Length: 342
Image 1 (tube, rainbow, N blue to C red):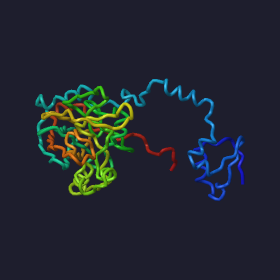
Image 2 (cartoon, rainbow, N blue to C red; image 1 turned 90 degrees about the horizontal axis):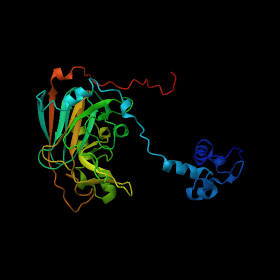
Image 3 (tube, one colour; image 1 turned 30 degrees about the horizontal axis):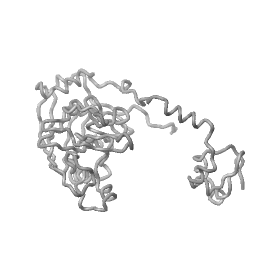
Image 4 (cartoon, rainbow, N blue to C red; image 1 turned 30 degrees about the vertical axis):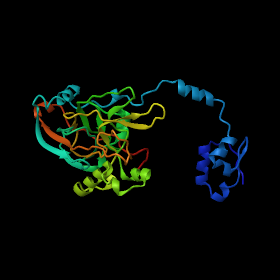
């Protein structure tokens, strides 16, 4: 059986295979200009010999290469921060000016994880206390753990690496700030290799990838994923599936210029450095001290033992006078029908 139609695209042919009975699809498909064998359609190497790119292909390639990059999201169009930029600037100095009171000091042990709760409007810091060390951080809405930090949208809206003023956005359908960075003592920017600090591109080290690359299992039970998982399951009433992509605190990373591969450098963090956040809603935070220490040794290197340090956590209550005009963030106002009628 044959069908007569306009020249189908390769993607259209794949869709046809899904909706037509296999016995029918195994026959040839005739178009207005040529007949395709389904065996060659399903083989990309053979497909290239049967399909001639349209004459405009070179023009499209030229257009893409010659067009300057277009930033996809206009940060200036984001909803303003409640209370305004001046209030957030004041939050960034609240500890040093005595407008925030220390409520709790904690320590994340080396090669382990710790979780803590931060009420809306409070500050928390992760502090380098003993030596250069990076951390992988998760954040959840403490009242609804289905809402959690959404690194890819945060990356799309802000940048590959975060700093003061950037917000940590939650997943769909909530899409609101869980926290805002109010202080970054490193303020690294980007170096000549394109590396920055506090990335949302590298996810977390995990035993699955380690096993994939080395064939070793139990040796890597203290990866950041495992540390966060133990903390989630044993202390927070969560599961491994609740552990999500992280903010790589203090980590110095980028993409190589030639191959665009993820790379790391030794962290520039020094004792006394910190990153500070204001909780935009009640949040549960969990962070792992990475077994790679300052990441001066490549991941998966089993011949060298990284030096690993604990990190400090500080939680501050902001004085009420400073929070005039501030209020917790609200979830997306999109009604969520996605074009479907009830």
